[in-house]
Length: 233
Image 1: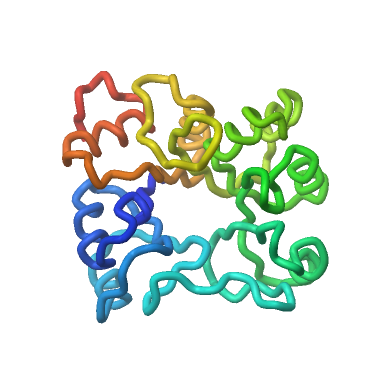
Image 2: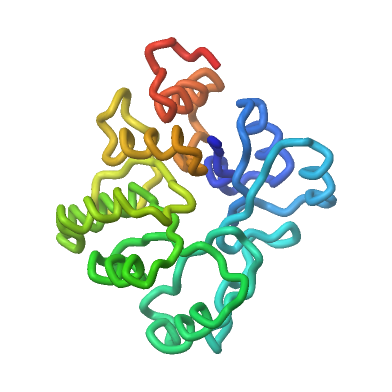
């Protein structure tokens, strides 16, 4: 199933961003960063739009804390970022909690500065058979910065426990959530389409604040691989 992340309109009120993105006719991923609006949880339920939660999303706050000081995950999102390296428990308690948790979220492949931010840690996660959310823009940053080699990317691309895929574009230095280039020019996009066809949830995460409705629809067409249809749904 194809999703659009609410972070595509990050900073806007939740209900307004949700309704605007829902006009695209796809499911939505509820992400942190939007301004809370009263009754938003009921609004989502009444809309009938399929939705899933990511990282520090909260119906009541702009963002919720994801990891406790003791390393426990505090949210009930389907997928989360693992801790940043600067968090004191990042290499100690969080993984012990995760390995013991009976109901644990999917961990997202990150970029340098986070756990799962380099190829060696991604390999270790696959060796441990962890379910992963693969953000191809994060993988591109790892590869551009020399943190992941071709062999690791090939193994990740063929990993059989990929639970979610995120797509956006960047220049390889920062996670800038840029719109996708036409065709197959964006790193990892052709592979993401294969995952979409195989039934893996794929989430478009590019910023859409300055895009028209038709330009947003063309971004979705690019994810599906049917951009040549000229924006058809």
